[in-house]
Image (cartoon, rainbow, N blue to C red; front, side):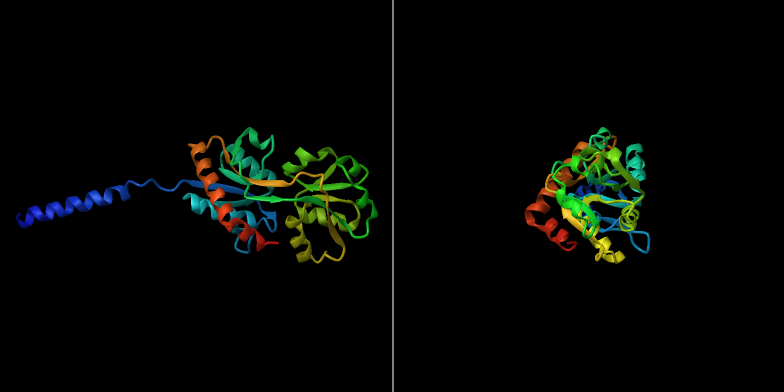
Length: 251
């Protein structure tokens, strides 16, 4: 075999070996939308980048699924609108009838949290609450865009604010009595604001737990296949305990 023929053979072999790698499709890009004032689940840092438990959880399973993720924060109602309009691709949130009209969700949640109410310390009326109806005589607050409120509470009885900080201020000044919410979502924020000696959380077992599932707009290209990849990654992370270990850092 002459030298020229040998070089051609080596080159052909190298190309044949490289072609499968070169032919690998790029990782799909998913632009995620979050509530930008929902500490510790999702918020902007000093540099304007999104951080928090939901952001880290989605990053963890997205990495396992081989998906490239970008994270964007907005007022919550606007973030959901951008997903519906196709300017963003997905979110990690409670699956509701309204959201299911334009998005599909992985069946396994990344996170489940128990619900209760925040209220001023020493309010004896809270102990009498055993149903949603029992809260009708209390002034209730929530934040704009909350899907859980629409699904599980009497939404028309809630006074809605732009974010949870505004709701907490109204609890303190006495213009609201209760803020239905998950303990993990708000307690760290209460401590950061210096309200822990004036507000407290009481669990309400009759309220369904809030499950945060990965959702993808139905118009996303090949959405069922991507959801299947994410579902497999979520199950893997749950079985290995990596999601639980991540969440434990925020409790």
